[in-house]
Figure 1 (cartoon, rainbow, N blue to C red):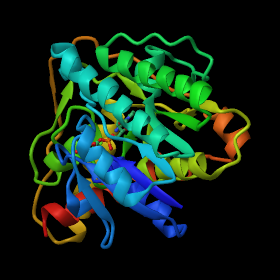
Figure 2: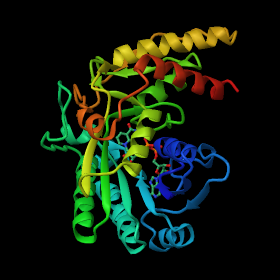
Figure 3: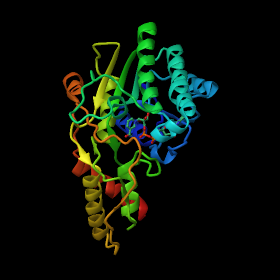
Figure 4: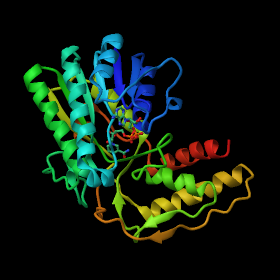
Length: 321
Ligand SMILES: NC(=O)c1ccc[n+]([C@@H]2O[C@H](COP(=O)([O-])OP(=O)(O)OC[C@H]3O[C@@H](n4cnc5c(N)ncnc54)[C@H](O)[C@@H]3O)[C@@H](O)[C@H]2O)c1
């Protein structure tokens, strides 16, 4: 099948493309490269460099590539930017998404998979939240992710396409941008592998559900290809296991120290310090994956210890190339 992956030059989108190509699908990326890079794309993948809000740019991609499926990953994903500038957030996450949906409908796209977020929909939860948990977004970013799901339901009902919303927990792994606010693992790797002191916000006792990027790519692969019982379905994609930021920092630090030693580098990784708490940070967020396991057969394959080891090695090879 021909699959157009918006945000395909980004972190998660490029792993999805790799997984789909391995299955024999033909993929193209649509990306404005605001945080993504063509370096994330394997050879031969066509890149349509355009903003999802650009009607003509998106139309060109649809008419030239003729996608049968669309995987919508492109987004404004900074919670703090959404708070500071909710109009900008909505322009990309609502208007841009509507442009993709409308043009998908016009091009008779059969199925759309959308990157939603369990973290922002369920809020502070200490037990793995199932999909029925009432949505309670407290940031404009959360509001636009929920809005995206509601628009998907509308397009399914009105136009007969199929759609899946995947509500990711905290995704980490190779290619994550260390300059954003969300990628704490990437930020720690970037600092620690250079022997710099990383900073933990507040007391670090913030529990999160970290899911490895290749597991998330596999969930997208299944959501695109599986037989679906309903026109619209939302699935959580997480591990139901929590790690707090102090534990995460300690593991990235010891893996970084080991990696540097193995490479013969005389660099000592200092312990992280603690900065001020970030206003509004949830104390705990964790999601259940029972539904996607039962219906699509997905389970997380890479645990945090293994995923962090692989991520440290990937960043180390690039930083010390
Ligand atoms: N990383 C996480 O932990 C996480 C958690 C929940 C949901 N998500 C969602 O997953 C998706 C992918 O996120 P990611 O972590 O890979 O981030 P990312 O920044 O690496 O990827 C987003 C991609 O979209 C592109 N993009 C941004 N705005 C665009 C626009 N207006 N037009 C065209 N392209 C645009 C960027 O250049 C980038 O390549 C996003 O929708 C995000 O909201 C991510």
